[in-house]
Image (tube, rainbow, N blue to C red; front, side, top):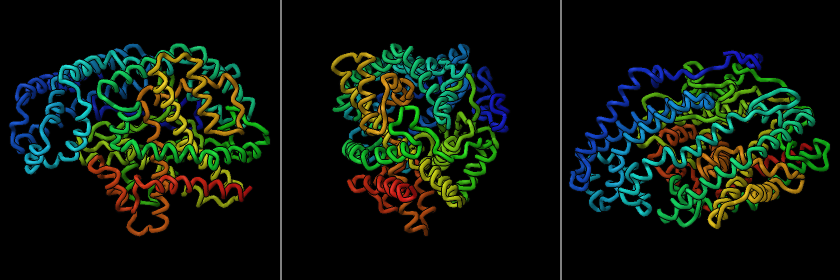
Length: 594
């Protein structure tokens, strides 16, 4: 499609969801829903209360049946969610999405017993059953499933939580998404949605940036009560769940889901916080001088540098840039990435009612991932494309592991995406000969890395403070704003003057609502990729083959096993400093150029 508001971007791809289902009222969708309901009840009748007595081969057959049903249900919900993602404000689409969630939740209730009962099998008995090849292939899934054993509740409670999920946390998430998508902003007489006004925050005209920033503050501020209610409610809900499941800290359940130790995340958190003065404080002090400012306002953080080219990059050129960068490292990556652009696997245009931001949805192993973007032709949009395509290619490679083992923990799920960004950056830098433009490219990469590492750890700090304080009582909007200002001031440094209206800018960060404590995975991934790329530069021979094997593994191995072939260990405290030092050296280089 051609975006009428941005025709200079050229033809932009639109999703083709028919690989999932022909339409929301198709016979195929109805058939899968009806057959899943029947299969779920038959599965429950056949196996409930009997798992401990099954031999390994029979239990392996049961897991295979369970995997097949889970994939069908995931296919149904993927189609529903992707349909909803591009029409969040359409009541009929919202109704369809909600009804699909309710039907799938009802069907999956018949399957819930299976994982609960598997976790009640004693370790020694399960080890004996795992001698059967039919079950042994699912060992990684069983290993990861059983980490939740200490936090598992009674079957009745687990069923109640499962059935009420569609009107509990999920309903608040939907309210957030629909509210944020419906917000309209007016800048210099033009009405626009959130992606477009955020894009103006990168305008070379400081007056435009200020107008955009203050309009964001005005609209967010006028909705602060609702966003505060959503945040307080979800934080309280999480507190209750943590109490019943006996998690010692608000972030512990996320760390368990990521299959990573609390101590490793704490080490990352501390290392980045300690590096604030050497990284973000130092960089933004330089940037203020480049912009001719004594102090920077919040609308100056993303300002382009003097001399930075303001050209719009058409979609076709962005595709070429990213695929070329991927091919220069490993041609197979580019080959796997090509169908995303030619087969309707990407939805790229900014549209009213479409979810903001970007993501790659893995869908199901038997289909392929789908990428959502809000592409406006800026350099950072090209980097976002490189990032999401990295996710997509990773998901394609991991799909051979099947429905139950293809998912990668969030900490490692960001590896391919951030590595894709690094490949694209290095490709652009190597082809740029003009010293000023090289400096701008370096500065742009440093800002991206600071956004991925420093900003995301500041987000993590914000969540820690909000969730911890919420356990003592509901937080007023003003208090949430104070916490936001504290972490932003600490992370970005004394170069910034934060005006009072900036205190509401926490409201639009979807990760706080969708997945509590998700954000540190970005910092984990960036530091990991920095260390990986340094290893690649030092020893390129054979690196690509080991990298591809790591991506293909999906969730088959933990982070320690996956990193071992590269001589890396995330449990080593020096690991994080190794990753952060890459950012520090780039800032050193910029200081030298200045």
